[in-house]
Length: 249
Ligand SMILES: NC(=O)c1ccc[n+]([C@@H]2O[C@H](COP(=O)([O-])OP(=O)(O)OC[C@H]3O[C@@H](n4cnc5c(N)ncnc54)[C@H](OP(=O)(O)O)[C@@H]3O)[C@@H](O)[C@H]2O)c1
Image (tube, rainbow, N blue to C red):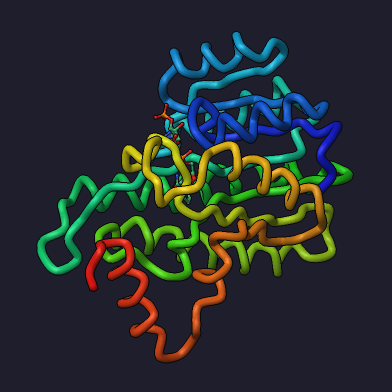
């Protein structure tokens, strides 16, 4: 996609990958509006990046999405890029009872939220000359990590939704782009020091480079093997990947 001259709304822009992409887009000549629940984080990022805007939003809450979308359209009529990046990841136990709060909050945040936000803004985006909807899914959308089964299922579902939406929006001004990061050193699962995860800066550099091309899926190098999942008879591959993550011989 074109990396300058956009008006970009990004969820989860107060930390990690979202903050990094927001800052990179801010520095390459875009109007960027970040959002999240923690106002202190949003303020920290906008203070460090004069000219960047922010809007408090709880993506779990349908009425928060509806009012934020209305505010966005009124305040930023040039809005042409909606970047669904916010997400949560928690350990669960697919072999046992799933905690009800974990289940509903993960599905609401990671799947219903992006669908609701995009749905609220899509008619506005269609009126723009060039527009885009972006989704941060995960390499785990394609090969699951069994200890975060609910999380992986939301990312697989979001990937599927993006495919349908891209099909439906063909021939319009709106592109649908999926970002597929591998394990990256952020606060997610306390991974800032995790040696098996890629450094945040590496994730951001590769994402921005690929985002500047015309690909529909920004698949980072480390995520390619999982993205190219073997297809039928995939279970041995899932076992191999999970044994690697869990250090099982
Ligand atoms: N790090 C990885 O290894 C990795 C790999 C693949 C994909 N991803 C995906 O990348 C995206 C960004 O994650 P990250 O690694 O950068 O972790 P992060 O620093 O924890 O970022 C997650 C962001 O989502 C926001 N968020 C969570 N719940 C929200 C809610 N209800 N309403 C609004 N905002 C909410 C958080 O802000 P508040 O808490 O302030 O609301 C936070 O800024 C996620 O979708 C994640 O699934 C991460």
